[in-house]
Image 1 (cartoon, rainbow, N blue to C red):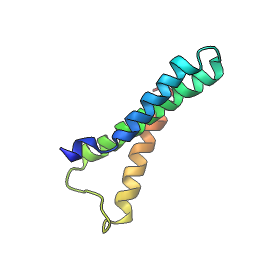
Image 2: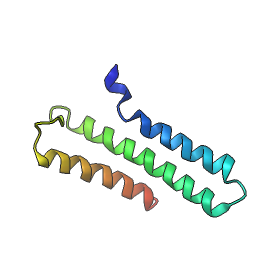
Image 3: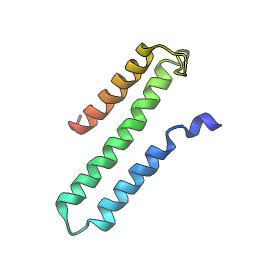
Image 4: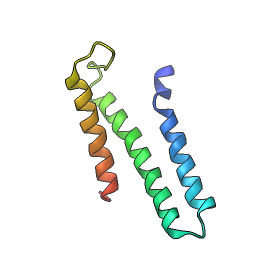
Length: 88
């Protein structure tokens, strides 16, 4: 069950950014847009992480793993974030 809560803090950051966009920056559209986009990017980072975990269930990353696994995860997460940032 502990595995299901990995990267949960990123969802909390996203909720914080969305709340800031809706409630704190309601009268400032530029800051509201910035907070909304930051929320979208944090959700994309969370999604990219889990895409990597589900696509490569055997190739887990730990202290002894190769640099290629770290690069693979970084590429998958950045591709997810880039696709959301560019509006799919």
